[in-house]
Each structure stands twice: as structure tokens, then as C-alpha cells.
Image (cartoon, rainbow, N blue to C red; front, side):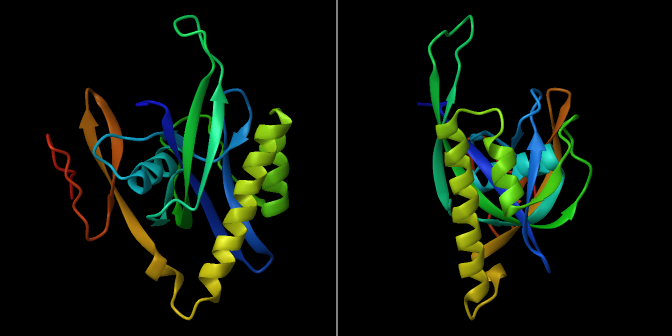
Length: 191
């Protein structure tokens, strides 16, 4: 199952007009949440924070627990012709600041919930597009529930710090939840 699991950062901000979601474009021009593979040595939330940072330049607070899970079907290639099913764990991320993304041609853009659902349905199979739109609906419900609690949203969300480290001549941001030192048996995450 390794390699068959991904994480997505469902990035949002609150505006007087309502909740807005940050989507990025893939190389093929489709709009999507910042997402990628689950990283060894990182929690899913930390890996989602890393994807948000690299793909959209996001700094913010990431919810540790996944609020939604969906399945993405990916076409095979010449080396592995069979279709692959990828389980995607979606984590909420309240954006506090944006920097230019490390990945080129991602074009991070804010959309209202309804526009985000429309963009996520474009150029996709009806079932998959509907599944992505449901993730936005679940996110709205979760955000409203977090906002209606007597405690603040930051009690459920953790600030995620990203520190660049060098791996094989390329710089990657590594995520670390504040106050927590996750350990990989072979190495410790940077502070």
C-alpha cells in the first residue's frame, strides 16, 4: 500500500463575504487542493503542511486530524499500466500568510466555496468531481463548527513551522508541528 496514500491541504481563510478556499493548478491546468504523497517520518498533517507550503506558499495552522478522506484514481503509465487508487487524507489549514510557492506554475488562487466546487469539478469524471465538491462542503461544515465553539479555532488547529533543509542538492521545506518533535528512527526533524 506504500505510495497509495496521499495527503491534501484544504486551505481556507475567512472573509466578510464568507469562507474562501485556496486552490492550485496542476500541470494539465486542473484546479486542485495542494496535495502529494505521505512523507516518511512526518505525520499526515505535517506532510499536508509541507504540500501547502511547497505548492502554494502557505503558512498557517493545520488541523492534526484528517476531516475527510477521498479516493483518487490515477491512470497507469508504460511501466505500470493498471489504474491506481490513491486514498487522500484531507486536512484543514487556516492560512495566515502566503509566500510565493516553491513549485513553479502552480498559480495559487482564492475562490468562494461555490466557485471552488465548480473549479474542482471541471475536466474530471462526474463522480470524482462530485467527491471533491463534497470535500469543500465538509470543510465548510467543519470550519463553521470550529468557529461556533466557545474555544478558539487555534485550540483545534496547530501552527505549523516549515524549515528548509537540503536533500540531494534540492531544498525542501520540512514541516514540524509547534511543540512536537516527531522522530523517524533514522533521523530527527529540524527545529
